[in-house]
Image (cartoon, rainbow, N blue to C red; front, side, top):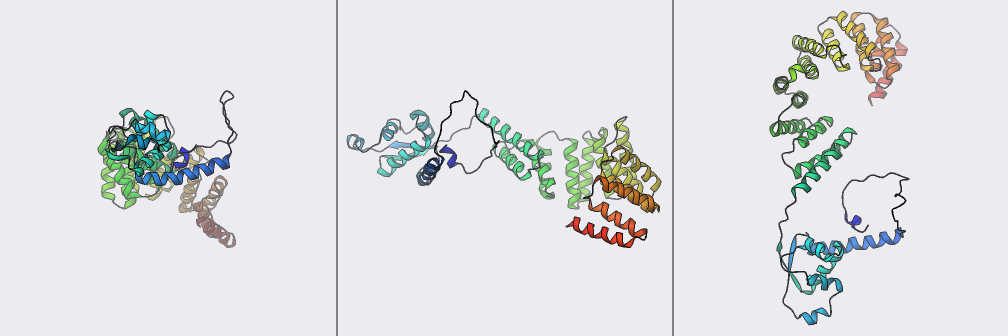
Amino acid sequence: MYVLFTWTHGTFNFEPGVTPDDEVETVSLDPQGLMLEGARRVDEWALIAKKIPTFEIVFSIVQWDLVEAERSLTDDQRTLVSLIDGARDVQALVAASNLSEFTVGKSLYGLLNAGYITRAGVRARMQPVQQTDDKVTEHRNLGIAFYKTGMYEEAAREFRRVDSLRKDDSAAAFYLGLVALRQQRWVSAVREFERHAQQGVPRAGVYVNLAYAYERMGDITQAQAAMRKALDHGGRGDPIVQTNAAALAIAIHDYEAADLALASAKTLWGTRLPPPAWYHYAGLCAALTNDLERAIAILTEAVNTYPGHAVLWNNLALAYEAHGDLDEALRVVERGLVEDSTLPQLHRNFADCLQSNGRFDEASAAYRRVQALDV
């Protein structure tokens, strides 16, 4: 318990109501006394650390009158004196003496102040490969868990620890890039994905992420180059990569290339239904090329397939509005609001439809809701 008081960082998990198994022996302790003693030891350890900042320090005995000195030593100090040989470091003394780290540190501190021992050097302690591997795995798994639960700062911290233990760990660079994307730090995302691509066998998905980061930075040339690499590294046969290629093509107004990529993606899915993202970009591409009837057909299929996706309802309403069918646009946007009443785009589109239909008071109220949601 006292060791816990010296920890300055770490992670923990607390589950209320969980107790040890019945066969585990438990001890009743006074928490107030425990905390007071722990605080005292922390203060004392701060002084010890000034003399013994690392457990890799090696000490040697100073020539002195052993008989006279023995009278002033504690039992713990006598044990350590018999073990100090100019070769063992502090960690080795802890292991050989069977004393706690605090007791060894406190005893050595007293011997140093009395002039009975002196610092002989610092041992370079090589960390065992297996221990390093275990630590890397531990931090990597923890980082992935944090990332999946949306705890991005914590995830980044764990993957930076992986980086410090193993410089060429490609998973660390990849997930640090993903965290940077989530946090909209585009320059950092580019740096990490580029580093990942250099460390191992690059995958199409890495270059897709890289293309997106470059696009958000406004560097379209680099974004296109990254997307070409994604396609060249297996992406031509991947419908997800083809859909992302279409999204980039739409962003740079290359609607012909977008249409080709979307058609390729749908072919690659075969009998499987495309995901909502494909319908979103396919409908958008049709609308932007003024093929509104095709856009309406695509998005109608989309909302029938994925009725819970409010953005698709919003897109369909916009297509109907652009087509001049305001009543149908209003009906569709109202249906979208049933699915998600928190989406500002839906309320804005709803307000536009009301205003176009001459329902100005209702439109004003809808615009006020848009302002409240945007805040």
